[in-house]
Image 1 (tube, rainbow, N blue to C red):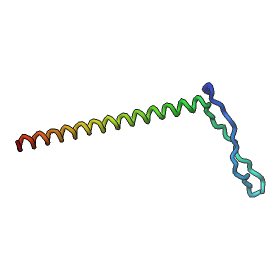
Image 2 (cartoon, one colour):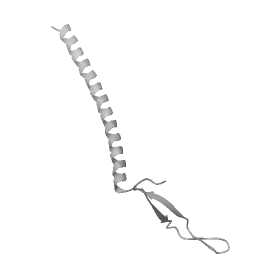
Image 3 (tube, one colour):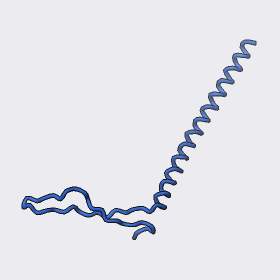
Image 4 (cartoon, helix red, strand yellow):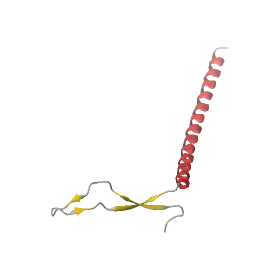
Length: 86
């Protein structure tokens, strides 16, 4: 059963025909390859972009968390230095 918008095209290999020992030509085998519609290709690309964006957002959240921890450590170090040297 094929999906709506999914078309099949026959593609013939571009290899030269082979020959047997009896010098008979062996023709390349045709293959049926599904070809996606433009809408389906765009949908797949959109899903890939969404996944990439989600990954980038996760990396950014980790970066911001690390940045916040570093800022707190600097503030803590600065406060302890001010306390030690009035």
